[in-house]
Image (cartoon, rainbow, N blue to C red; front, side, top):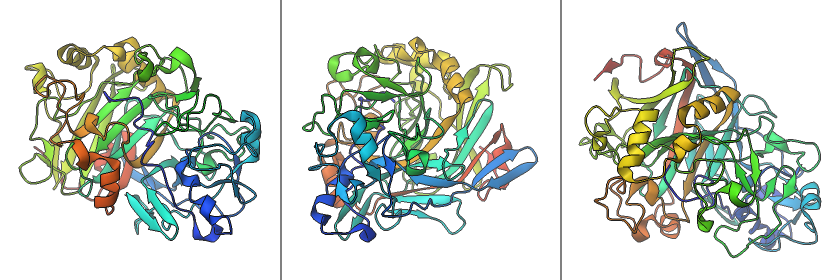
Length: 492
């Protein structure tokens, strides 16, 4: 999305202050700090609490129907207790402990990631059919609170499910009725390594413990990359704390939403897989280098409100898609010649609700016949209309995004708040120094201000949650079979 450099790394939302009850010891006061520290692509497997992945069935569909395949979800390493023999690897919530982390390689080889208590500590629960998960925003534990979560879909105990979506469609049921302004229930794909960059040395934990994260924002708050700690130039006063290196990779945002606004966005990158970036390669916004890095951080977003249709998505019967009720979201990745080998040429969206298929809204702000899907032509018109740099085209546009989809990407299910700009880029006016009446600035109806700040949301809306279920992938048109709400669908 057209947004600051931190999202969607969940830099604020992923911070947890809780500890699994089974791990309590005399060190409990120090342990309360550890969940505030993001941990990615590193560490040894822990031994104090078993890692048991919640089951999540994924349906694979063809014209003959859908077949459920056994899968699971794993919690990102960012939320886990990181320790050496029961002692935290941090002196406080922001600072490495030199006793364990004297240098980058030693830190990764010394510290361990513990297993997760998914429901009790992190607020992640499966439904009775094992085909859906609910993510709670605030989970209150005995010794602290956990805020949000990020999960990856697996196809085995040690490997992520690699989705190849070109000339395919992806469908899921979502319920965002209990997500207010300022929160984001995000579902997206990133070009992570299937094994979580497991190397048996600096990273012996791997995908089983949720390692290997990267995205198109090239986040610097990743504590470990490629088996080493991100110690160099560590800034513990930044919110969140950041290091010298960033973690870049291609990203396809399927669904970023709360009850007031939604968007889907491709973010191509010029490099394959995870790039451990430094300097200009990262494209840091704070250095004025946002459009000089390897990834398209803005992407080409289709947000109905931003595109001129303010009554399309929202809570209540006045909206075409009513976010107060569950819905099915379908995303099609169409190719230039209708084959698996053709170039990605269009990303099409529609919804299913109350037995009716609802076409995506038109991009009326771009003029007549602009379309209702993401194409290279629409993206060029959007950038020109909004006065934004066309970094999407510079990074290879849909062809480049399609190549990443061909290589395989990992599915992310998350819920987070935004300590950087309070999710204004999704549901309010952004940037704040531009007039809301300027085309492209107004992205949703939220007022912004204090009620979208993480501190307020964590105190006032702790019961917020999102549910994802009935995840399907298959040939174009195939996900309509074997679904609960789509069985008697009709087009409108």
